[in-house]
Image (cartoon, rainbow, N blue to C red; front, top):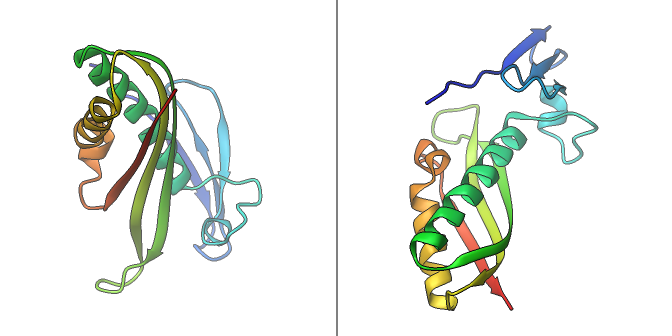
Length: 147
């Protein structure tokens, strides 16, 4: 299996510095990062490690969920997955930490009832490689079958 890479160039201190994250493997873009904007409610046109983790998690989860739906005898017509990744203070160790991740999925699936959809959704949460990598963070799931 392949290895994917990203690169960050950072200038200055945490409080006043900034950087650029380059998605090296795909070459699809370079994105600005800044700690003050990372910690603010308004991202102000910059990305953050949390947003990049959310992107990775939502994509990984969608792939894993579609595979498990098929294994359960269903046919996924469409899945809409969002991941919300929260940053907060690390009261035990100082600094910051990821304080939680919520996955939201709605889907149109043929061949599965609500119980089968929910089981596949929960199994995907547990078995998605990004979920496995983030076992130190509480991950919650909100799944709903449409139609």
